[in-house]
Image (cartoon, rainbow, N blue to C red; front, side, top):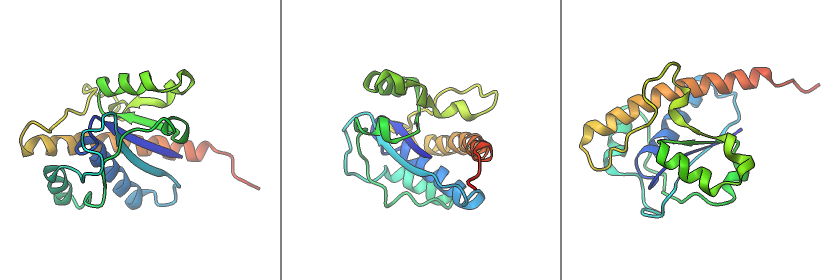
Length: 162
């Protein structure tokens, strides 16, 4: 399984999602073989590390984002990744606009993994203060729990090799 987390610039929400889910996998389901990456729909910050505020907020929760570097979504990502998770409706539309139509079902919102969730988007904290980055992590942790449940369910449903 290959999962790509996407936001606009790949310096706040999507690298945070990558870090949160990577940590959750390592702690709770290290047996799952899942490739994780993140990217942006725009090239504003290509090659840059995540926003300092995102790094600091994640570090307070034991998550290290410092090695990540922003990149833009590539055409090849639509075939490479099994699941592409957008942080909001705007990025969802942009991803689907770029993707071949047969790949649209694999492009979903991250917050779809929160059961009965009232929030559909992970808000962009870039122009706000530090509390916005904490809110993003709260939402991503909740959605990551649901994503992990789905990945575990998929793994259990797969036939075992004989």
